[in-house]
Image (cartoon, rainbow, N blue to C red; front, side, top):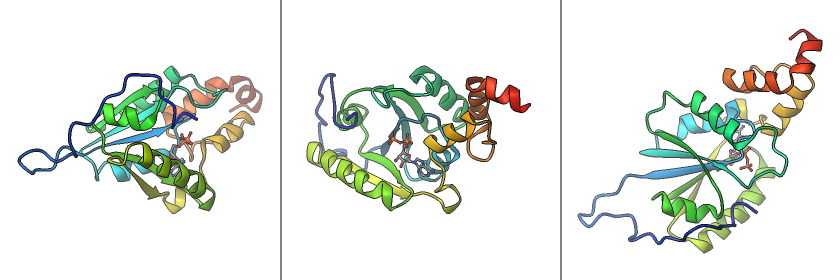
Length: 191
Ligand code: ADP
């Protein structure tokens, strides 16, 4: 499982996040995910959380779904377009163990979203395992906004693959990519 695997170089955090003068360091959070594709639910989470952290790193997992709809490069392109006007957001791909990646980037927080009870059990297991691996890194959960809690990448793909309207579910950039991907369906629907 990608959140637990790591093939790269290990690096230790040098201290507990407080500078020697006692002032808190820049608070960096990593928001990891497959983002296949990025949805308005993800965007809402980012909008709300970027006010909580000095820097938010949106991290696309390289060893995620076996058969993604979009390549990692395509997903990075979409994210960069959607988030280009946000000054405190970085976008990159990572592989291996999430907590080690977070530590390498100097992040003290892993950000995840919870939509429904169905997300909770899995997220809890991952958060506890990640805590065991790196206790100094906290997982922070934000509840999905009511109006976005029904949106998932999986459903977006399903609707788009059948020619349905996804304009309320994803940013316009992502809708354009989806239209290209499912061009034949959209052409026959005249969409
Ligand atoms: P995964 O990381 O499991 O592949 P995703 O890439 O779809 O999942 O999502 C990344 C993170 O964003 C997860 O924490 C997920 O719960 C959260 N998320 C997904 N969709 C929404 C939404 N509609 N509202 C809030 N959070 C969401």
